[in-house]
Image (cartoon, rainbow, N blue to C red; front, side, top):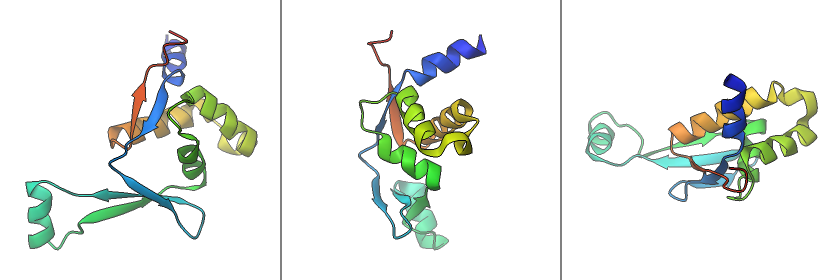
Length: 119
């Protein structure tokens, strides 16, 4: 049963959230900027001197995967491209891909849409 859910997950097509600004830094890593908004964030910025935004630098694998997200490739497609580039260094591939995309989705960096071609 676990394998079936992995297959379904791999069929999803990730799309980057356009609300987040990102760039490639001098170390060739993707840096995603998150601006903190809302009453509690503004309060914390004033009272506790919290920053207005955070900058999250992805590692080598995360940066490569982020750059593959084009709104057309499935997570499976991206995993195949990553395996071609990194080989065994990225293993366990499927588990890492699923975990990475779950984190991106949880933090609203990406949305996942079903690929109706495989449904």
